[in-house]
Length: 148
Image (cartoon, rainbow, N blue to C red; front, side, top):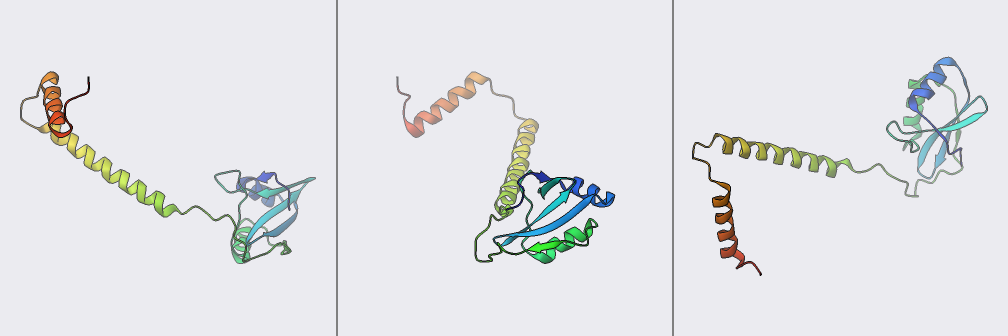
């Protein structure tokens, strides 16, 4: 397995632009591919952009496009640990999170509309004590008297 310490996309790009990378390897880890670079006397694995987790690709073509995009045109591939049948860690399914975000936004719109309507209601305000008495009466009707 390659070195555990990671390098950021930005640093990798800057090292590539400066011509400081001595070696680039694309290494298979089960069904995924990761990038290992050697510069100076250090060897690092490329990290995902928003975390320190190792960045992986599902195909050799996609990692090749990435490396070419930052100016790395030559690398070696190590497929000894390639196993397309092994389940790798997949990216989280963002569909559920996106659905929750839409639901939250919809609730927020509904809630703001309810507040706007309440503020624009021309009826006179009810004193707090009277409002609480109404609530207590309704609760007593629905679930019975409060325990003492």
